[in-house]
Image 1 (cartoon, rainbow, N blue to C red):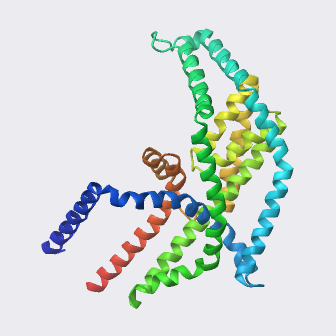
Image 2 (cartoon, rainbow, N blue to C red):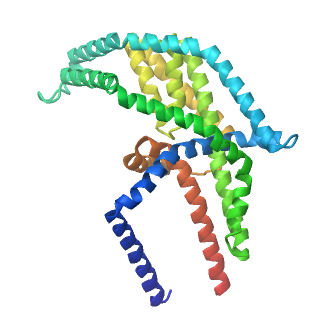
Image 3 (cartoon, rainbow, N blue to C red):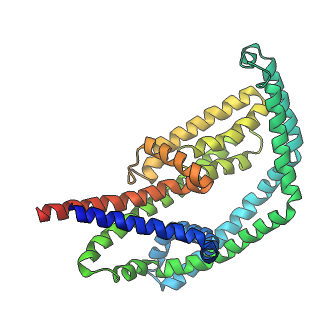
Length: 361
């Protein structure tokens, strides 16, 4: 590359950084834009996930009827299924949640008693090297922290109501956004390709197609796998007669969407509940979770998700560590699909660069 080209690239980077710096000085202009993005981000992301989940069914129904009618029919079917699940599962879930909330003080006392018992163990007592590290202090701080969290929810009632209101608005907006995504989503790539020169449209179409396949395979596969893990966990918890089986199974199902570490995060509440019951119950919980993870990793995931993303486990760990540090829970969930899309883009850019380099030689 000629030196003049290096200079132009450096000059462009300086201009971009200068623009970003000047933008921070006039945040009153960009603040409304940031608020708008934050407001629309959650509905669009959730609608995008549902788009990839429902698109195959809409495409199938659209072969027999107009696409708009197919989407409305799918909405009716989904509403009927959700209503049936609510009537089937809702009473039991409410019963277990109410029981759990009533038993929180008792559970806290049981946890504290358990930690105090561990403190008396001669082997674990060796870890108490000084007065700054003791199981009694850990027990006290843990109980205080949980009580503070529960009291915060009660005192900050206005914030809690605001959160519920925003959640309800998002739930109301998502069906409308999803409707237009399902109806017009197939046309979006064609509209984008019109902005490019004709000689670049074929390469861009291939990149968009690969990005779509990567996102589709990941989202659909992750939802199906998480659902299977939740069902298996519920059945296993019923078999071993663990308290709050439905609540703990739902926790395991939702945390499973976080790659690699999510399943183990979802295991912690079940192990704690089992440990309060008895050490043997905690051991049973650990054993059934290991069996479920083996079934998921060796049987369900390969069949559902396959190897399309081809991401090394070490890469996933590093992605999760970095994304969790910068973006919290949202970063943990979006890290892998974002990496998959960027991987597609970078691989195609590298392929095109190699082809042009060979043509120039």
